[in-house]
Image 1 (cartoon, rainbow, N blue to C red):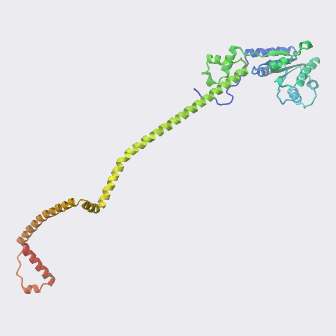
Image 2: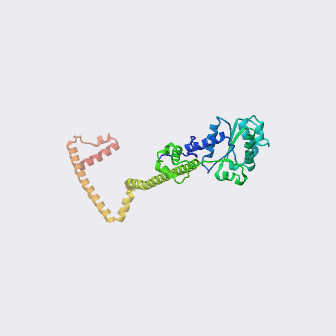
Image 3: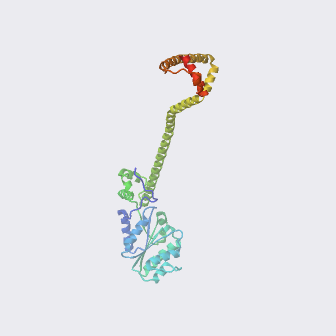
Length: 367
């Protein structure tokens, strides 16, 4: 699903009127041109009364002086008069005089059309003043038409009682759009990104619970699209949350596996390091360990000494044989010396002579 607009007003009413609305506008033109003084344009809420009145005034400005005011709860009679007079004649100060008297003081107008929106918010005194204004101005030949828009229930109450024999205002009711106009109106309101999702069947289902007034269609469609956008955002938020939880869970599951793998890799290294440390410690404490072993196992120590002595004896025998052979070779190769006498020994130092005598004795023994 494509992303929806997040602005507050997703839809806006198109300015172009429908054929049924244009029929109401044509009826207003006809009544005003036939010197109908007071017209009640009524309908249900959202029927398009204000839109019709605005389009009518835009078209009526070609042949008349027009004024448009909208009543509200703060509107007073003086302010309403000032707004009408300012639009018809320019800047005019606010005073307590009636609307008809102030209009008579101004330059005469060939035709003045005044539209007052939200007529149900007008006071009874100002409504009576509007009726007297059109009556008095028509009497002196100034054509003035006042169109008041309001709710149908309120407009029906403004009709005079039949026994008074007084001509009441002309009533023009705004009817709902026909079925084809409703479908085209919904299609015109839909944003471009949403038109592909709203086929004819979906639009007809949407219109089944609606009376068919433009304002009602606009409000309901606005609410539907806003709710749809909120659901779309919530769905995305849930998906993101689920994805985040899944990724966190997968990371949490991978962490023990990675930890176990790291531990498996560290075990051989730790074992080798422990063996090396034990070997090094044993090498440093070799003598202490040997003494402790002899204390614990004396028999093995004695056998080890015997084996050592035998090895030394065996090693010594070849050494003696080697020494004897070396001595024999030396004797065979010794040079001949002259016999020594006492006089010759006297000429030699005492230390040298002693050492020589000892050496001579050793040599004789070996030989």
